[in-house]
Amino acid sequence: MSNTNKVNLAIIGAGLFAQKAHASSLSELSSYYNVVAVYSRSKESVEALLKKLTNYKDVSVYHGDQLEQLLERKDIEAVDIVLPIGDVTTNAIRASLKAGKHVLSEKPLAASVKEGRMLVKEYEDNYSKKVIWEVAENFYHMDAYIKASEILKKGELGKPLFIEYVAKSSVTEDNAYYQTKWRKEPNYQGGFFLDGGIHHVAALQMVLGDIEEVTAFSAQHKAHLPPLDTISTALKFKNGALGIFLISFGSNSVSSDPLMTITCEKSTLLVTKDSIEIKSVSEQNKTETQKITVESSLVSVRNELESFAKLIRGNSQERLYSAKKALSDLTVLEAIVKSAEERKVVPICNFEA
Image (tube, rainbow, N blue to C red; front, side, top):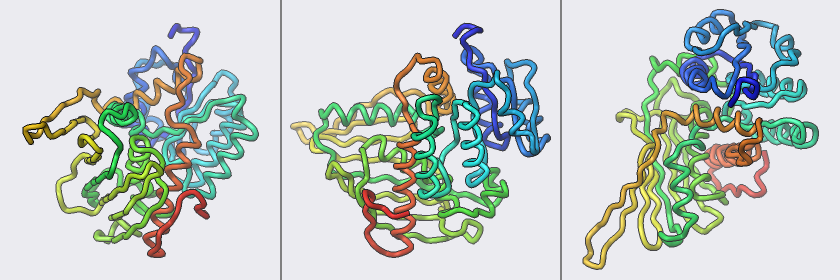
């Protein structure tokens, strides 16, 4: 983009993920953005983020009760909201939309389906014709999941029959993300499962389509990860496929990339964040493996920020992760938590928040 066509952006939130992922990604996107301001509740976190944000000059600093002052600036076109789950994020989204800013807000859409539905309705009724609101779900911008979805849509592997999705990690008490107060003392449903599990639900529905029903069981293996750290869920997709979805943040095993194994009529598709393999059985009853080259998942946050800039400037019509899609994923996740709590099958289409 030319200097005159760059998007004037403000970063709202300067915590760990903003510093580690958003600042570094935006540092590579100075041809798309002018980062003109950064806000956080504490001045110290703003200063920490600015040390990681390169290629931008004269970035204004806002903190404490100065968010409204930032949003009043006419030169700011868009905001990148990277705040804790809960009211602080939803309030920032509402205020930014009301101020006429394009919004990219970190997943999940909201802390609950009830709040998410209200937010989406407010956006569609009052702001959708004026500004763009996208949700930052970096799994949606991972090349492996994009290509896996495309492979299945082509139909060459036959109809998907069933899927196994397993993601195990060990979130210890010295984990940098766990050390953030709002994760250590969650005041929202599902605890770490909402914060981390929403990625995996997004990947599932992106690749295989809408989930129709869920039946789940949950457990808490680690005392420091309330109210649950492990969930096993049986899934039924609208396309007829069945699935098993196992997520654990309380595993003692070495953390590994989530593995998605999709058995189709003709072949099996194995997908991780950084790999795709297609396994087929030949006429000689031998397994043949085809490997698909994919872009590294490490650039996914950069990709979502680049996509956001292109949407604002009209250089792309593809809204990869709209607020509506984010609400769909949040609905599935909340239905899983409800199913585990109430020990019953929960349909998604008429889910009552």
